[in-house]
Length: 553
Picture 1 (cartoon, one colour):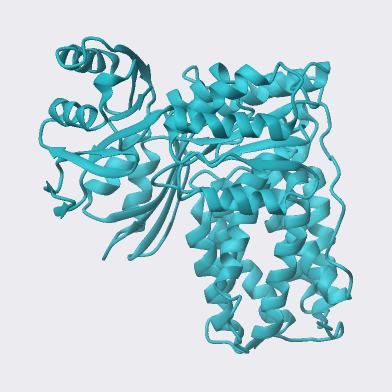
Picture 2: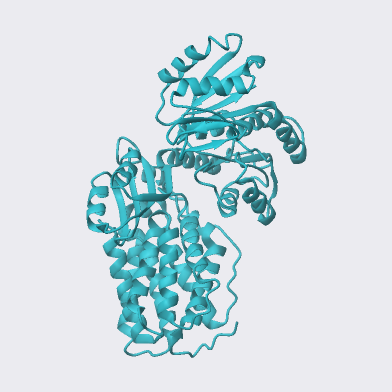
């Protein structure tokens, strides 16, 4: 598409292309943004979070052929709010929302209206953060806006005005270490601010007729005291990052914001009376989620990330990288999928997976999630382990898109199969075998285990002769419903009998959130009467929604 660079107004069509260019430039550079996260990223990597936010924003207009800029900008803002991830992603969504609010009802905008929309964008972003911190994306956006407002009365060309804005944003970015001591200690600029600059640069490159592409390179500076910068101020550690959407009627954003903020820190609560996006850091992730459910509203897109584990993993990886003793970059690395602290620990510490993508039954990772994980790993040979039948296609798509790596997919359909595959991986990685041979060994191991799961029914139904009441416990055998009842222990017993577990040797119970080791041991005592010849193992999985995930071998 050819853009007239002297254009003095922007309509819906041009705004769509500007958003696309900002997204494309960020996509090419998001790993550079990720590399700025030398302290633990609360919500995953900033570059990836901003990229996913922009992608969701663009999805709303990808098939929209609309000349009215007010309509297009509102669609962009809606998509960004729905897809916002992490602190910087939520702030970015509020910048886009404030920008759209000022453009409401306008078919196009000129330099003056552009400056007004920039003011509205920054005002809304600052209001969304209960305790704004300077030296972040907020500062970069504000100082860039100040330049636009100052020059808009003198400059009618949007190209020239955007050029001035990008220059001001870049200058502001370079000053962020002076405003935020932790950045100066780590020797980097603010990651969210850098992502924002890339978005603006992409837009400017489009107006200039330049190619929106760039080779990736590292911008990470090794600060002398980076480890000091990483140490959490709270003696309990970094806690959890919790994000979710609330759907309801007549919701009071201010009340929700104040209540959520009292539970933790880094609070971002934005939206309206029908849709609210919640982001907060807490030590007990159940509190904000239970609060929302207690209001009687629907929640969706729930993300819970253990920031303390991110911190510990980052420190270990960086120490290894700087000492030259990190991961074996010549070996085969595994990226797997799991949810729950125990499961993540099992895969990474015991079974030597290089990275765990958060997800499972209730949150299926995308191909982009896998690609982001691949980018974090120095290895060139990588195996993806989806551990869910609904994630296999995304893993295969990621493997096909990975350009600089040899990526294979072991089609594990359950966590239990994934664990069996990882045992095969551990047994082969020290031997002189190829990527394809390891992949085959892991694939063969999938058939060595029977997968059984216990959860609660979300509705009443009769399926394959099994009558289920909403709320009752149900047992799934390799994904098929085979048992149901109101007593947990009884349902587990039914499930094991359906699996002919009495003919097997080992039964491993991975207990989930809401269960503890004592309860799991009591379950073993109950089962031992029918399965006295079998060996039982009890492992803390911490997985949500499933009291027990059971492996039968």
